[in-house]
Amino acid sequence: MAVHQPRPALICFQLVPTEAQVAAAGARVRVDGSRRLGDRLLAGIASALIGHRVRAALGGRVRGLFSGGAPASTPLFRFFEGLGMPYVELYGMTETAGMVSLNPYAGPRRAGSVGLPTPDHELRVSPEGELQVRGPLVMTGYLDAGDQEGAFTADGFYRTGDLARLEPDGTLTITGRQKHLVVLSTGKKVAPEPIEVAVAAAAPFQGAMLLGEGRPFVSMAVFVLQEELARLAAHGRDAAEALLPRARAALDAFSEHEKPKKLLVIPGTPQDYPGILTPTLKLKREALLTQLGKKVAELYP
Image 1 (tube, rainbow, N blue to C red):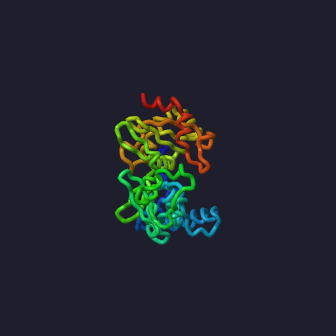
Image 2: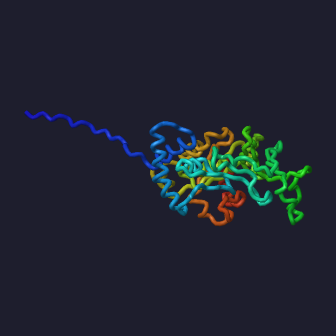
Image 3: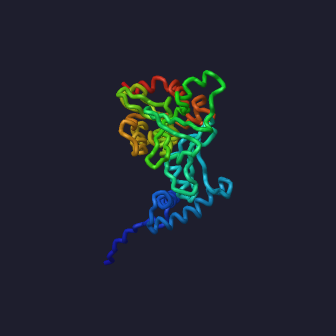
């Protein structure tokens, strides 16, 4: 009688790392300072393979990237730094003759920081958190009298309207816009920009806008591709409930009152909705709130 032995089970291991894993290892080495041999080997691969393709797409001989005008997300910073491409954030305004602060090109950089102030600018942060600037490069005034009103303090500091924090090491962090502050009914104030950037950088979100002015908690309108919404619907899942944990997970570094308790899901991308974007592709808060109408009120029964 023949005896059939059971065939041994096959166990498969992933021996070849994905590009995402390679890039993440590069960030651990070049941003976090990892000295693990495996991370260092993958960091070299990240620079040679992925970095080569990215440089070619950007024109070839790219020595570094300089970013300003809007905050860069932490994942974006870690991606380029992990490929061995310095990602240098800076801060400035037309009224200050350009650059106010800059991260070092050949030195340590930190995600979210806009670096050290230049010697030509004197900086201070008001009790309300507004960054104020004075110096020989700052303009003396606006041409139109209407723009001039309230632009300067009594002692000559230009009021930038940006919320900021001067760190113990002397570097500057921009946390939002003063006029965009969301004030909850509890009295807590929330700067929406950093929160929106963090969520918009996480999959599967294509854009985000914080809600909650005068309400007891913050909510968020998020843009999600139709394909992802169809996938959730096929599994019988409510998109807002299914995606809320992902949005909150992207905000680990934020306080609890800054994390949304509800989502309003908008199909597609911001570019699909004419009239809600500025020429620089930033969301127009008031325009979007007008379009959302009653849907926002329904988040706060």
